[in-house]
Image 1 (spheres, helix red, strand yellow):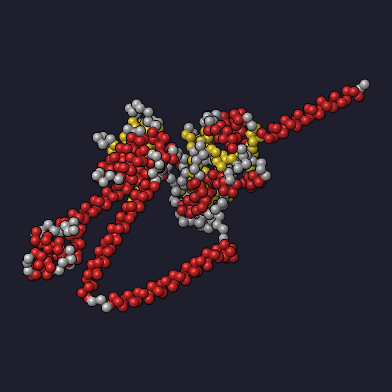
Image 2 (cartoon, one colour):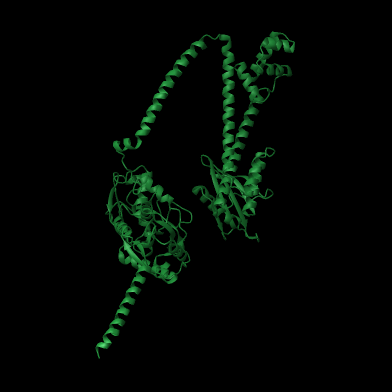
Length: 619
């Protein structure tokens, strides 16, 4: 009787075990692993980023896990297919991007006091009583850093030393102290090393805790960047990115990106990470450029063996050798022809040498004019190729620049007016920054005057970054503002500014769309290029007018008869022909020619004709 109950009981136990295995497998399949660079230990990494994983799990539905890793662990985990996302510093991300195809989906926003930062840098410092004043003074001294693969803790500083023509590995004694950064600061203050380099913000945080006194330290190669409050010795670079791997589901990556971007800056996960949430992925091209200059992975130089070179390029070697042989034959043949031509030229009589000299000079002048015309044509073709098809504003601007009935100043006024109308701004200004000051060139509308630049702080940012700077909000003077610059000569900037004041009641959003879209960037850069071209040609015309005015001043005292003689001399007529055409004697013609040379100060008849041509007195 008892045996009859065994089979149902075993069936129930088996069903429960199978259901548990299915649930565990389903849970394992839905688990999403985020590899985090644990530069300060696993415990610190889990405490900092686990709230972010819980936040993603709550809003997306999958189970997210934070996996602290070292640089070497990342390679092993990626090769095993254990990671879906990576969170690391910009330098390490670039290495994974090139080697494993990682793609950034968002950029971390750090926090300093109440200010949100999307960029960071490095700070190189020493004791104020060390006697070191600049980076060059560190030659032969010791420098403490985290490690040679630390981005903010060493590689940014290495780039600055390279810019100072210093080999940081040969000229400076390096001391690797590892994490945390605070140990490096304490070593400098204690005098165990001469200088140190740490990520920006470390000094300020230690000073806020009362651990150090900033007045005892001196920042080397200190830079001042508007809007960035931390001490720094190098340019700014984007913060840590979170990136997806090629095998990660695209829809999941999109959900993660959207969820991170929607995270409030005062949410618990944001505060736990020491930041203010996330922003759209920034441009990390600057990091690529730094690694290329430093020639470190993934841009380490690869020596090319002679055997490999021959196997790869032997076809080209044969082709170049053949071309070289043909060039030698052509040169020899050309030399033979030149010798024959030289013998022929020696047979030409002396009375034709002056005429040939005149022909050569005229030919050189025509060649110069032809080159100038060719440059102008190429400039116009380049401007036309940048126009976007179907864009009405580009067609209108192109029509304005092609109108010969407008002066240069009228063209500049029209371009600024059209650009201001397109951007939806109330005022526009075109100015030139030269010699430390701004000079107004064009203002739109033309009946108003406002000191330039419209916003000094943002104008400096536009000139230093050579990028479009715009904002929409309240800065005390303007409700909306946009600026773009172009360098037309050494330390001479063309600055275009567009703004709308607070009293402007209509909605100003045109420039926001233009500044953020690819079409807007093209239009704004093209407008700046047109304005630069117009200003350059305007200065050329002014120079030409000055030269023509100077040349005309040489002919102020000539008579009408001397002007007739001058025209015939320019036509290449001899004294005898001039005497016959004007019905005067040859001696009178010679007298007029001598008077022309004396009054103009010319050294010869040829120079006299050149002066007359420059003054536009003869055809």
